[in-house]
Amino acid sequence: DIQMTQSPSSVSASVGDRVTITCRASQGISSWLAWYQQKPGKAPKLLIYAASTLQRGVPSRFSGSGSGTDFTLTISSLQPEDFATYYCQQANSFPLTFGGGTKVEIK
Amino acid sequence: EVQLLESGGGLVQPGGSLRLSCAASGFTFSTSAMSWVRQAPGKGLQWVSSISGSGGSTYYADSVRGRFTISRDNSKNTLYLQMNSLRAEDTAVYFCAKVIVAGSYYFDYWGQGTLVTVSS
Image 1 (cartoon, rainbow over the protein chains, first blue to last red):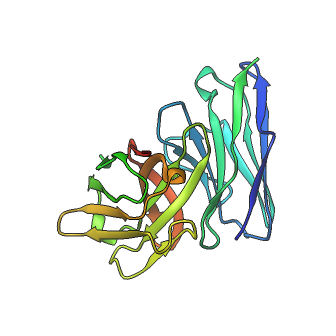
Image 2: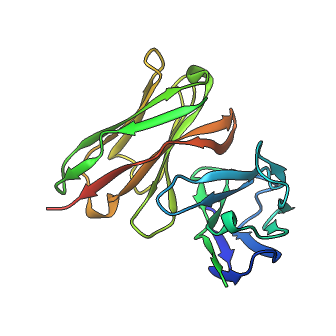
């Protein structure tokens, strides 16, 4: 199974800050990676797939990069509605696996 | 508008069974792969199972293989998850999710989730 390791597990940031979250796969997954945002009590929301493709309707302050084993999600200017938990997910092979999550908290 | 509505969750004793349903609308269900993803209380996301649009291909996490069965009825636009031999560690919110495009198992739409509690 491919293990997905996210870091940090939590980050405190202020509105307007640039936030970067990393995700590392235990083996190469090409660009088969997605990022999701989840708010408490809600379903996850797809932000980015294929490592860098922005899902329709997602603000352009979100961006993704990387390939192989190392990936990043960047929020260029943090907005109040962005405080949430973020997960990466590999879609290279079954079993599909998620990272442990990164909670973005208000500083 | 794409909608996914799960039902069937509840409290069940260890060793018991439960069937979850996910009613889909707003897209061509029969050509869309679907999945179940769960989230234990206070924990992260865990993929459970996926099924192709035709239902001819199914995939399972090792933790549920042999106990859970994913299926679909394309005439009813409904996805199912039959869960047998339930364990305490199966306690979670279960989400159904639509796969964005065949062969690319990213989840572009999710239901609101249904809570399954396994406890005596």
